[in-house]
Image (cartoon, one colour):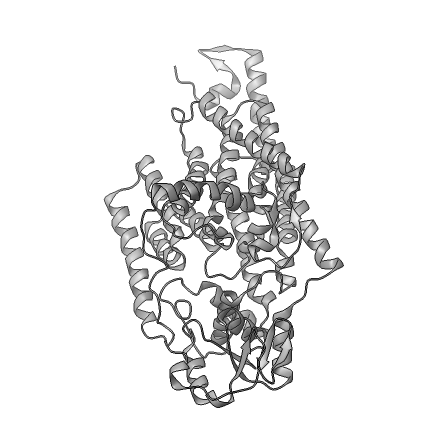
Length: 528
């Protein structure tokens, strides 16, 4: 028999009043009322949020303050784009020299470059804000949809706030789309009930970095589970996606630096033997650096450092914590019969797990030549896997002991990763690694050298640090900035050469030799 809420609160059942039931239900009502008016739970959630922000800042700020820590010519190219936008010289749609990857990072940095002198710090500052936005938006969704408390949301998001030091470096690298896909998929989830907005965000995200497709696919799957993927919804979202995609492609045709490759690589399935080899590499070198469960030499990942983090026993503790989280996740899913008790509050953590896992599967199955340390950026979305797994443990389990173990594993892993970041901070404070590109840029500007040819990894890096008072021309790859090509063609006789071998009359700066101009034949002129 259905009992009205009013009768339940007053304990009246079929005309009979039970004193104990009345007291219990009235107490429950008072608890609900006090929970709405008592500011203490909100204060605790705010404290956890501030703690997360401090962790994010501590883990990543070093890579903003010390420009030599993790910066290369690809990053400098985006910095040069931001400078040109700030100067109203160019308004690129995609990265210079290619027809894919939206120039989102350049447009985010451009207002800062217009207000202040361009620098690595300002170039990376918007990316730090994106990290904060990811932490904030994920926390809001976890508390509102997955019904986690502020403490449980904080513990789950520690895997995003405090990943391994390598992941922290790449999450603030202006590489064209390292950290943005994490934010795009969260925005897609938050906007899923608004098909036009969701479709437009999907179009922008996909053009920014194709990895957003993992989130798009699983979002459609969960719309089907919710029985909300109607024909009207699909047509509206697809129309918005197509409109954004086509509009930006057309606009890009009228930008001067719209040339080069149209995609990163052709999609092809790797042979079985290569897939197995990639799987071993994924767990031993890739995810271990991202999650922080491996003994990692930071120099192997293009970080200017001589230290190795997570030595034993920290290595074994970290491995044990991830094994514990995996065991708890499997146990709770089976014990609580997740797929029989599936409810909307479980959709978001499952979405995170599946999206992160898809990034890993795509990495080992479709990507070519993946066994390189710098390609950890391809699987940064894997940090969503432990976030979703711990969220499901907190929301499904009725055992306090299991929740404590899950939280303890998250805290232990975060502390170990923060220890690695602390070691890096100590290294830079006690003996700051050299900054050879800055020294080279200063030498060239001081000696009024305005133009030189160099290898790609030197040319744009030094050009950005010199604030374009010096122009470097990349010779072994096609020149990606047409303005530079024209400038070089007009001044080829006065162009210096920056080589890594001695030359007559050359000045040695670190590992380079700045060689005086020579007459070059037209066929050696960089071309598009």
